[in-house]
View 1 (cartoon, rainbow over the protein chains, first blue to last red):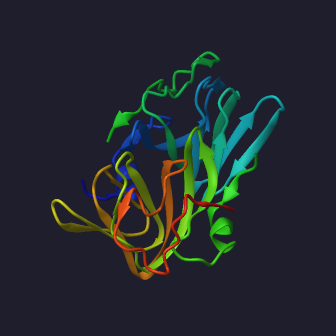
View 2: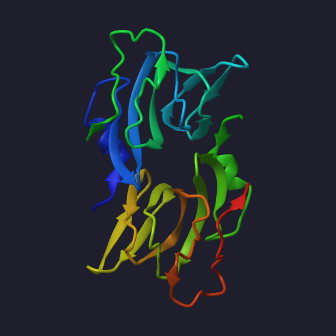
Length: 125
Length: 125
């Protein structure tokens, strides 16, 4: 029941593509994540996913139609449910995410999961 | 379906305590708000309310027990459902909020609403 500094939360772990849950809002999580390099194509069939870039630059490749959105620091984007997407961050980024508690990072359907990807519903801080 | 820069969203309006909806996540809103001075004591009976300070400093007075949390830039806090609270920002602040679509800014129960307070479920950008 105290405020949490996102910088402190992000400084408390090093793992990439491995979000930490900073707080809950009803049955939603607020998560922070450090990312760099390529993630995996995946889709959340039943939920939208919200991204806020806290630092760095995030690319989100999308299918149907194929395109890539690029988010800089302070930019937000919601990937609609049912849309395949692949985040990447060539030079690294720090993110804040909103999604329902229990949402798996790799979605309901996904390409083969590479070794560097942590398939998780989020870790405690 | 394009990223939104929070700075641009915040630059698009001047009204204080009058949130704009920047995107939806399922049946939740992501809102931004400019605040300065005192808000009104209120409570959301059925929902938590998430605050992220994008700039400035936000004070949130809470009841039962009585105390005030102070959020600087990059700090987050969730006011639990059922807890009376009164935000204030003596020197101004810019906020990002996450709450269910339709949530009224002044909650379900509140003190008398001063003239400078916009009782709204959020405005379109």
